[in-house]
Amino acid sequence: MKRPKPAARNATTRRVLLAALAAAPLVSRTARADGPVSDIRIGYLRWTERRPTISLLDQPAPDNGLAGAKVALTDNNTTGRFLNQHYDLIDVPLRDGDDPVAALNTLVGQGVTLVLADLPADQLMKLSDAGRDKDVTLFNIAAPDDVLRGKECRSNLINVAPSRAMLADALAQYLVWKKWPRWFLIYGSHPDDAALADAYRRAAKRFGARIVEERVFKDTGESRQTDSGLVQTQQQMPLFTRGAPDYDVLIAADENQVFAGYLPYRTWAPRPVAGSAGLKPVTWDPSSESWGGTQLQSRFNRLFRRTMTQLDMQAWTAVRMIGEAAARSKNADPKAIMAYMKSPAFGVAAYKGRELSLRPWDWQLRQPILLSDGRLVVSISPQPGFLHQVTELDTLGFDRPETTCKFR
Image (cartoon, rainbow, N blue to C red; front, side, top):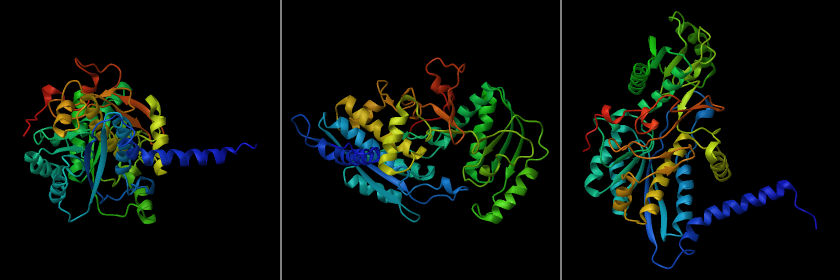
């Protein structure tokens, strides 16, 4: 009998895996212990309007974030079938002109009170206030605004995405560890770019670095993806960065992807670029393979034929947090799930070498931050030598003595 060729075996294996994963939620309803099945429904309010990007490679997939949530849902159902728990995900895509509060009310009308939200900070605050009396808990999987962990924090808002302060601190620790303390800071002309620049100023002061000069790059609305735009930036960046005092690294704060991608290899002085280009602080990277990361990445790629993004990972983590709390508490009631998640006993594994938990003073998820050059993970923060009396993860972002959060 002839053995099938490797390619044929791989194709067959892939079809079997896909079929098994697709059927997992159905199996979870039947192949379980005797007893009633408890349904745990999770909503997903997903903003589908995306900013333009400098590189075509950075354009997000239509299911960015949603794909990660689906993988986690399968993981939850794999465990849930032994606990008489079944998970469903209700996807609610939103576009310009849609009312997120109305969408949330529709979910609540369907009995959904655990909701992932890929929305801007102002919308998250409105949703949190609208859902408080309805026992809604929102999981912020995208907004990095420090204000959501500070003076505008909410008791029913769980911040899964890291804050700007956490990302800036993660990069700052590495640069200080490398003995690159002199920074040239360039930030964009948009409000969120200025907020990110504030985070880098705070990080520099906190860890002993020095910003030798700051400059603002004004967004003039030029096309990011045309030949004329490329030629213009090719000529502009060396001149724009000329004349700065001697520095070790250029820090770019450009959340809108207007200029940072054009900085590497185009600066006047031959110096590394970090921040929004070059060496980036990220929650996930397609090259991450430690602590079982290869297994997750391979499974994701087989299902969706693309690499896993930061937003995918943050959505995956949020869904897994719900699944872990439900499994550990052995309770499908959303109130019981959240009570356990907010307790000191809660922790969730996320392929980052550490158990992730919530900070009780602002409901921010503690997590390591990866530093990536776009091809490999260069390092992971917190860095060696940055100690803390409770956990080194609290050296990233606002610690308990620094918080301005007073829950509403």
